[in-house]
Length: 139
Image 1 (cartoon, rainbow, N blue to C red):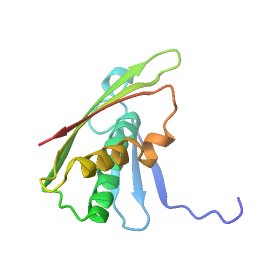
Image 2: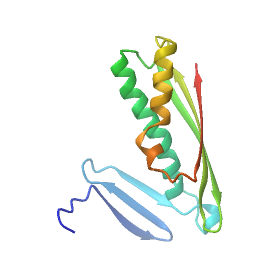
Image 3: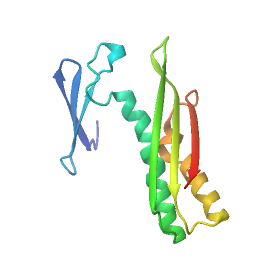
Image 4: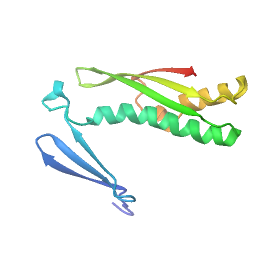
């Protein structure tokens, strides 16, 4: 692989666990297989991370766009529900409830922020068969 420049490394710890290391910061994330797939469910599973990444990406992009619009985010939280399917085992639905507290946002700014959340890079990267059920709630 020409010009291969890894950004993170992974190590299999045994017993269906991995440790991922972000090379730029040294941050680590441990994964575990879920209870319904032979694991202990003691940490995020790889599919949990995929689902959480959607919400995290939405929040990051909203933060960037809010800064561009000159509106302050007083608070933002997300709740995520992942639904698995079989044949093959895969994510079939990711439901995200994104709660935004942006008091300065007028209707136009709200529309821009909503569109930004729904079109984040992770949303565009997920397979189109995955139902992305996104609900934005304005606090």
